[in-house]
Length: 78
Image (cartoon, rainbow, N blue to C red; front, side):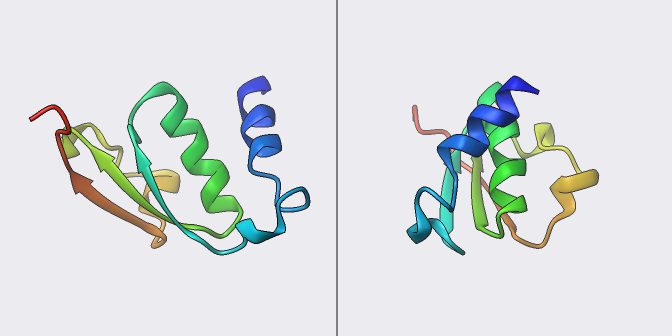
């Protein structure tokens, strides 16, 4: 998958060793890019704080059950 390849290259721990085990804020976690980036970040062992406008749109199965995810409902436009 091209999108996953691009995300993995952008977040490569070989290229950027300081990216190991970070706590990362991900806005738009239910969006097109956010969904793909979330899986890459979790695979690399990061703890991810996800900000979404509607918690109901955040999937509850699969990778989304990972204990490394914190979920917050936030509307940055308000």
